[in-house]
Length: 144
Image (cartoon, rainbow, N blue to C red; front, side, top):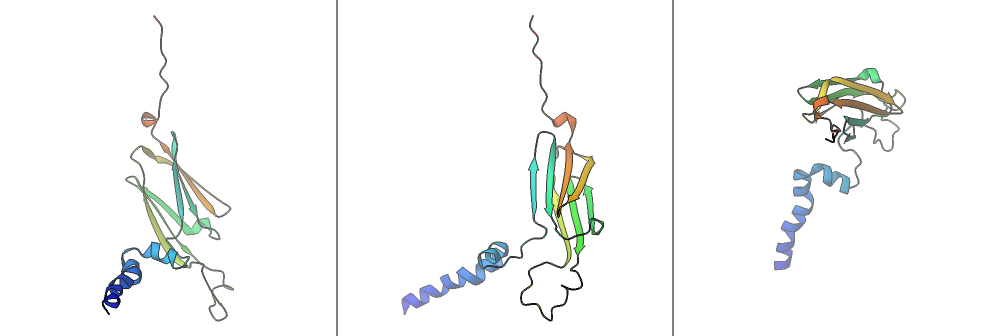
């Protein structure tokens, strides 16, 4: 009986509590595929910060990009084609439909006046150059 009493709190923590405090992790472990949309990758080089958003099947005109005070905001609405939007005959539907918004904090070294965005093959690639004064410089050594 004591062993059953001790197991109850642990079993409760394994499921309900973890899903409350760590919903993304719990959903991915539970086999659900819907996490934060759109998924992103961010990389940095000496000259720029590159943001990749994976948004296949969207029209670039339905995406809004705004940079304000080193914050990149990406928002839009993803719509399913009419043939796929009908739930009457669907067995399982994992494709997200609806509005989304992602806000990404950029490093202070970026030049927010010169972003470039290219949408190709379902990937939105945003390049934001770093300010010239923050880039590494080669220093010449003079011999005397």
